[in-house]
Length: 234
Image 1 (cartoon, rainbow, N blue to C red):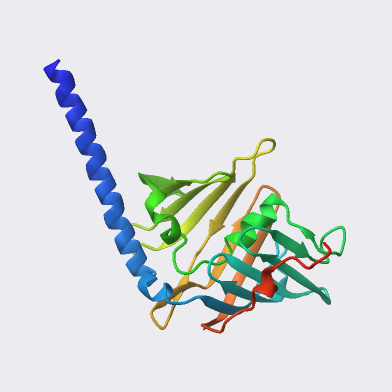
Image 2: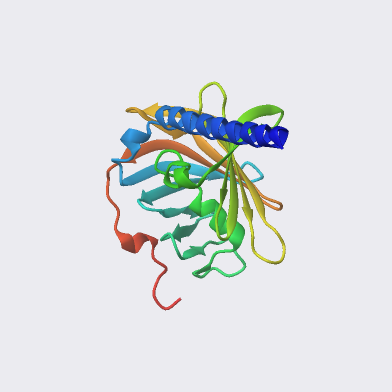
């Protein structure tokens, strides 16, 4: 009985120490990303390009508005495209789709648009709901790993042990039917007036690859909510 009691104490102590370590790592992570500055930024515009699986690049403009409103637009083979989410409804009109008309996004497309940009670290809005998993392997390197269980998705975040930056995020759908898994990779960052910004974001799914390259960043420019809403009549 005494032995079992001490085992329980050891387990609880170990769990408490691991939870505290997870909180300490998050604090360093948010500091590395300039989160205190990002909290003051409610809108961002990015000029850049997106690159397909065949390494063809196309001009792109990304508009972000807090909380969770994102729009991508540009030109693809001399035709305009637009992809957007208002945080709830996600839609697209693009010449690479079978029909060149406004339509709801697929699950994979929605994962990409909703995770293409965040106000600093994507862990910050869900910091109170993360589970610290310790060290996990990704591409042969051990990273601090956090799990976020949402109603529809499971998200796993991989933070570097040295610079505390986020380099990988695995997003998995929890819908019935065919599971969808998308790996988001950030290879490099750049500093912008104390804000840490990815130079590019790469998405790889079961049957697609897509890279968004961020060339120029403009903060605090403002954005009308109409930009993100699905056009009427659709």
